[in-house]
Image 1 (tube, rainbow, N blue to C red):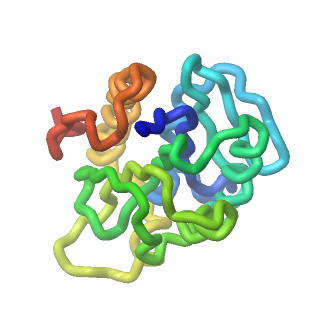
Image 2 (cartoon, rainbow, N blue to C red; image 1 turned 60 degrees about the horizontal axis):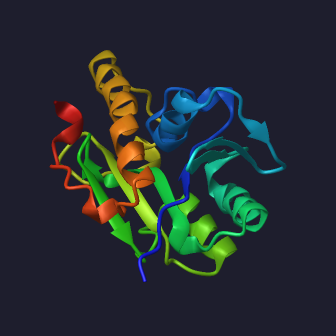
Length: 185
């Protein structure tokens, strides 16, 4: 049976020192659409019928606490969730969708897997890697966006409106038929 996406959860760090950093991309996308979010202990959310848009409070490596809190509040299953996050293994701004994948070292995803006790949830991974050479994640994730990259990030945030609409219609992330350069157009 096909499980519809009901909650979209963008992760990042809440601290002001992390604003405009590449690691906050998922949180930034969600906050762009907030009008009057409701605060819980570990998360912020807003019902944007028929979807719930949400983000974690605090640090990304504790993001699972907020998602667990929301699943319990709304009586959802992990299969109803789409997590939006940065991915240091993908070039900026290429993206991939996945379901049931491991964390690949992403501390926020590790926290979600630990708190939900499963990896069976959807992910929308947006690349933040800027060079072909593999670098340590900590060398990448806390970097700030350049002016040119910031312009692309603003396009990304606006284009998520179309993605949210398609998910609200019942499409699953892997059925969106978005080409890999979607955010560059």
